[in-house]
Image (cartoon, rainbow, N blue to C red; front, side, top):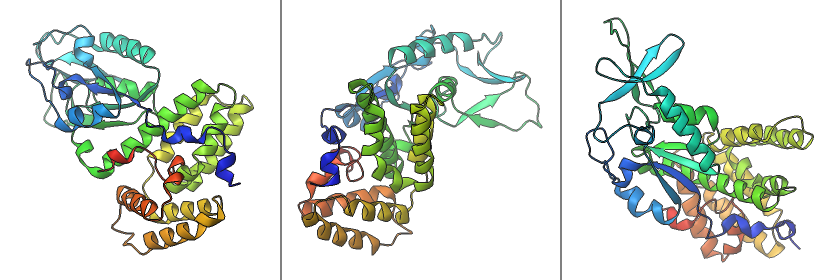
Length: 325
């Protein structure tokens, strides 16, 4: 019997019913909630992602009590902090109300697996919201930041992946976001179904995938697992380390090494086919390939060699292949 066949509940890793929970800026879903009463509908998100994820429409500004339409707001630099204020005098502040809304949201959606925000939004942007000054001086250089809601989300749920509507159009950014979101959703489910052994089972099932992205950080994650079970570290430190691995730069060398390690764990009849598959990938122009292309090629080869059963392991299929196009 193969090593994988001994693993408990391995088929959970490719369950077609698994739908990670994504928080999505409402305007991207076509809702007219922007400050000017308009929307910024994104067809890829509306037509494609909503079929594979549990999507939650979210407008932090409306959720914080602001009207539609409403005065424009922005981030403003203050001594030791950033505030969310209206751009026109008297610059009414909305920081506290948005934090309260964020706390309610994270309490309600405690298994959030990702966030999709709107570029340049003062609340939902991932990285490109300008930070202004109430008294703007010529010598002050403009700084960019995540929006206020996303800043708070990052501080409270560092392990949750975030992306905006422009980044998600890029196949590699989209691919890495999907890997992260589905891995996090499998983590939540494993813990919920097996409170005692769920973390160890999740960790064991995902070793190959994590080794493929960063073997050094995966070793540290092994240590975090042991420290958690010895009650020396909280689980959130495991999750934060997991996020570091899943956001590591892609390395073809690490990916191929993980495939070679996996070959020793499968049935003997499958090993020769995996050897050919690994050799095929190694002949590609590794400097030009990105992880999304590796996974597309991998899926084609698995079908060619009739190895689809290996898709029960997230190393081979980290999220539904229907999302890989």
